[in-house]
Image (cartoon, rainbow, N blue to C red):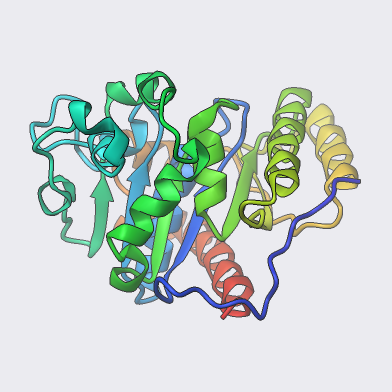
Length: 288
C-alpha cells in the first residue's frame, strides 16, 4: 500500500481560485505528455481556461503545440530565472506576456527549452528556497487568477524540477504502462512526495489518480502487471485503461488532441479524458 497525500480540504488559496495539476512518472515512455496534452483539451472542452507549462527539457509538450526550442520569445526557464532576485546577473529580456503562446483552442502555453536541463545548476547558489521557485513564479504573476487550471508536464526524473513541480501543484495524475518499470517509477515519485511532506514547507499535492496507458488487453502479462499495480496503489483512483489504439497514435503524430476529431474512433477516447477531467474538477473543487 502506498501512502497518499491529501491537502486540508478546508484550506484557502490567497493567490486565486485556479488549480495547478501535474502529470508525473519517473519512468519515461508512459505517454505522460500525451495525457497532459489531452487533459488540457478536455478541461478546455468543459469550458475552463487552461494554461499549460512545459517543465521538461525535452520540450515534447511544446512540440505538440507547434513550438520548438529555438523560439525567440523565451521559455519557462528564462521566466523562472528572471523571477529570482539573487540571479539578476542571469536575467534576460523575456517577459511573461511575450513568452505565453496563445492557441485557437483557448489553451495557452508557456513552452520549455533545452536550458531547463541546466536549471538545477543555475539556482545552486541562491539562498531562497530552491524548491519553491515555480510556486512563487505562479503566485507572483497571479496565474491562478488568470486561469481555471494550470496543467504541468514534468520530466521523467527525480531532480529539482520535479520537486518544484510537486511543491507548486494542488494535485497529481500518474500515467503509467502496466509493467514493472512503471511500477518502480511510481514508487520513486511517491518517495519524492514523502520528502516534500517531511520538509514541512508546503503540503504535498493531492493524488488525483492513476491513468493506465497503452493497455494491451489481449496480453496476459499486461493484465497481471496491471492487477499488481492496482494492489499497491489501492487507495487512489485507478482510471479505466487507455487502450493502445492506432487512432490515439494518429492524433499525436498530427499534433492534435483527440477532441479535434469527429470520427467515431475517437468518441471513446474523448469520453475517457472527460471522465478523468471531471474527476479532477470534482476532487479539487473540494479544496476551496
